[in-house]
Length: 359
Ligand code: AN7
Image 1 (cartoon, rainbow, N blue to C red):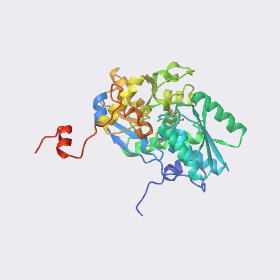
Image 2: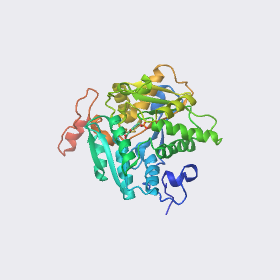
Image 3: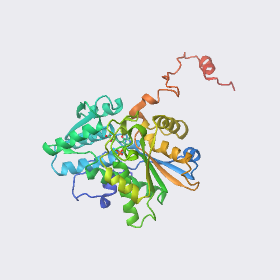
Image 4: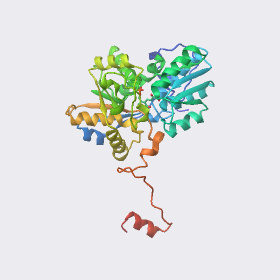
């Protein structure tokens, strides 16, 4: 059989905190494409921009990189069930990896605030699902409490195994480019991913593989931007439900990553997020969920503020697949539902509807 990508644990075994002989629970995560995006580079006035397309992971988001580690270690420790709080993607991933491991998954989601695609995934992978009357932050408190007092293993990113697995994305970026970008940009919710990328880059730096760590730029939605406010937000609000998080779990790690990389946190409006969501699918050819466009939206904002040198080489992580949340794609710029025109099977009629010229 030709070589097949073996998932992040097998590909990076020597660089991960994992015991030899562990039974690896993998769905082939990682090895995602780094897509050159000249249209985005032109828009923001940078030399080069690449998208790290994390929607290409098995459950459609970057969470799978951390989940293979967290579930592999949970199984190694004899866990029979895992639990997480989630805005949707973590629960989809936890449920899939638990199914692959043959153990139970429990997911706590904020009532009415996760997309149907993600809920469908958790149901498909037979998670025990509870909708909590509260927001994500309430769900996380509950999940931590339950994991401390009952026989259920926590797989949120407060579990360091998650961060450890997610750092492999930085390794892949450096391998693909042969250098580290000047800036690495991404959406931020709990800031687990932001912290994980920094950890990965720092390890590459310490091993002499890269000359400098990229400046880490993390962006939040305006109504849900605790890192910009400098304190937790009690009632976070944004259409970007994946990052509707007011009290980030990785607060200290993220601040230290920001500091060490001379990076920054910023916020963008829901309108800016949706504009970039459309730009990425219309002009770049990459379909992401709205939350995932937050990093690129922030990049554009910083470009307007004159913060991007013309020779900058930039990587933007787009965290989750567009199919997770098709609702926004089905609306036009004015917010009206898009419905394709109905037609007969007559070529003449169809050509006329399409305005095709005869050759
Ligand atoms: C598409 O699934 O927190 O800053 O519970 O789904 O590491 O939290 C999701 C987060 C960005 C933010 N983009 O990552 C969850 C959850 C997408 C996401 C983030 C999430 P972190």
